[in-house]
Image (tube, rainbow, N blue to C red):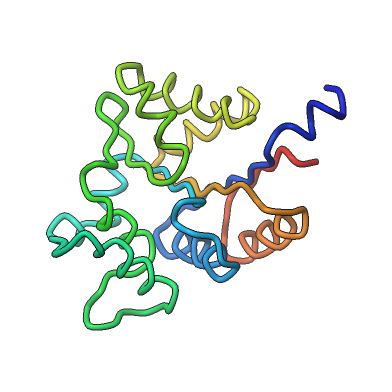
Length: 185
């Protein structure tokens, strides 16, 4: 790959988390660095959502601003007046629109458009294609797909700079990320 081609591509950082707590801490690391819900990708299977985030199946949002209020609550940590925090808040804020028909995935963030476009395809083809479109090599995309089938959660972001890549990799390792990929190096 020519250097000019590398400069045109956006860096991506993706990590695999095995549980709710570590995944929510991974998202919190991003939010603490002022990344927004429009920059953070979260992908899991529908089964994982049901198993790990069951309480959000009963959440009703009261207004158009609810997603912003929930996201703001996430940034402060903990619960305020029973407001959901972490990944559950993301899912609740967007509701059933996250479930990608035909793929069996729950997805949030800018990668959703690629998955929705693949909705009629298989779970493997849709996710793998979306990850490849984000400059993830096919072998890594296949690995991430297998991890989702095992009930794990993917968190991804386009880091703003190389310092953020190093910062998030180190932080995510400390909180239990099992696999971390970046196309930056």
